[in-house]
Image (cartoon, rainbow over all chains, first blue to last red; front, side):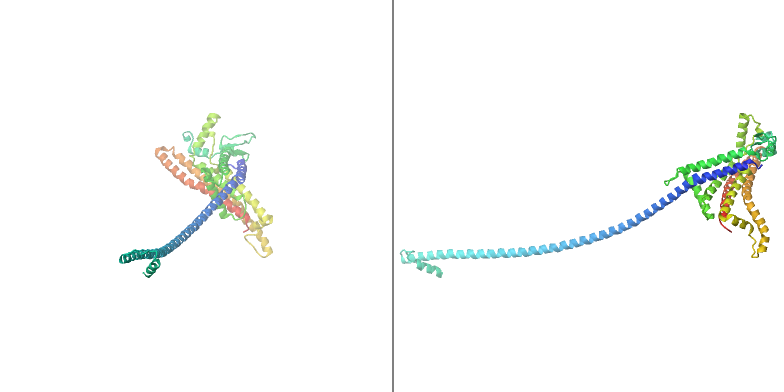
Length: 156
Length: 295
C-alpha cells in the first residue's frame, strides 16, 4: 500500500490505452455502427416503398380488371346486336329470295299454261279441220285454206 | 492453506503485500522480501504484480476491441463484434447522455476506463489463493525463492497506485480542457469569483481567498474521491474474500459455511465491480462536461 513509481507507470499505461482506443478502436467501430444504421434505415425505407408500390399495383390491377370486364360486356352486347342484325338481314334476304322464287314459279306456270293453251289450240284446230273434213267428206286442202284456218286459230 | 505454518494475521498481511521491485536503502535494486523492506524502498519502487496484471488486462481489452474494430463491417456482426459493439453503444449512450460539448476524446476514454477497470476488478472474483499459490509454486520451484516471501496481489484496483494513477491522468486531462476551453483567466475566475459574489469591488476582493479555499478543496477532492472510491470498494471486497478464505481452515462446518459465503459475496461482488467501473466512467464524463462549460 505504498505510493511509489507504480503510480507513474499506471498513469502512463492508462494514457497509452486511452490513446490506442482513441486512434484504433473507437472510430472504426463507431463508423461501422453508423453505416449499419444507415443501411438498415435504407432497407426499411425501401421495404416501405415496395409496400406502397405493391398497393398501387394492386389498385391498378383492380382498375384494369374492371376495364377489361366493361370492355368484355361491351363486346358481348355489340356481338349480340350484330347477331340480331345478321338474323334480320338474313330474314330479309330469305323473304326477297322467296318472293323471287315465287315470282319465277308463277311466271313459269303462266308460261306453261300459255304453252299448253297454244298446244291445245293447235290440236283443237287440227281436230276441227279433221272434223270439218269428215263432214265435207273431202279433204280440205290445208294450204288452200290456210288463211281461214289462221283466222280460226286467232279467234280461239 | 498457508496458515498451517503462518498465522491468520500473517496470512492477511501476505495477501495484502505487493510484489515489489525497487531500490533498497543501501542503493542497490532488487525484489523486496518482506512488506517492511518494500515500505523502506519509498518512492523508488514498482509493484510488479500490479503492473503485470493491469498491462495484461489492458492489452486484453485493446486486443479484443481492436479485433472487433478491424472486422467491423456493415454486415451481420459476429459474436465478439456484437459484444464489443454492445459495450461501445452503451458507452456512447452514456456519453451522449451527460456530455453535451464536442470532444472526440471523451467517449474512447470512457470506454477504456469502463472496460479496463471492469477487467481489473474482475480479478477479485478469482478465488484469493489460486493465483498467489501458483505464483508461490513457480517462485519456489523455478527461482528457489521462499514461498512465504513470494507476494502476488492479483487485483490491480486494490492498489492505490493504480486507482490514483488513473484518477490523476483523468484529472490532468480535465484540467487541460478546463484551461483550454475557458482560458487561464476563466479558469482562475472560476476558482476565485465563486460562489460568493459582490458588486462592491472591495468586498469581492475580500471574497477571493474564501472562494479560492472552497473551490480549491472541491478541485482537489475530485481526483482523490475518484481514486479512493474505487480503491476503497475493491480493497474492502478483497479483504472480505480473504477473511472468508480464512474460514476454510477452521473445520468442516466453517469451511462449508465459508464456501456459501464466498459464493454469495462473489455474486454480490459482480454488481460492485461493474458498478464501480461505471461510476468511475460516469464521473469522468461529468468532470469533462464541467470542464467544457461555465457554471
